[in-house]
Length: 304
Image (cartoon, rainbow, N blue to C red):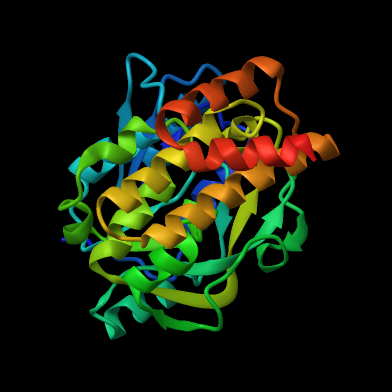
């Protein structure tokens, strides 16, 4: 049985697939199986995938006949096929240091209480050139070490996704199979909710070393998510789920709801990633029904 199942969901990332595949096949930890799922790409991705599959017996391919409409449905399909003790969802437009798996899995092997481990990342551009360390752009738990899952949810995960790039993380398959499939219902934030569920039942290891390369490009789904109302609504949905399950306190729910409203108002005033009037209306309609705290705070911000 493989120690690690590497799941590579792909959709129209032919330009980045060779670099991703080389960084997976070249990992110093060799006891892996590689499951590549193509979601009905139209850019020649399948030819690239088939060429690599013919060269390495560790590779299995799954080609969808119809687009699933969600990367998280591809996650679930890959999980159902996986046999390894650990899972690495290696997104097809990113790439990794060749020591990534060796270091991450060693950390997990040493700490049985940890269900997920992730490393720091380099942010790279479309050409794969480093532009910054993600430590300068995203919050981190602290120094390298193990952190209590429930405490992280209360203090950090309620406000934002602490693991900004799934490619930087490896998790235990047995724990993931115990989670419900509600993460598949999200368009953009399924990974955020997936990590929350894992951290509710296990702890997290953070490696403060850039072992992953997180690619930013115009087609990236997470970039598109900030251009409409869906991401804001999904943030409020995750807050509601965390509160309903008792994983965050009432005060944290209130504070994070207000923070989300302040952030939305600030970006609108600054003109950074502004939302259309139609998107704002949909957010407010959702908040009127489900989160009056957010609604009132947003109104206060805009009336100033």
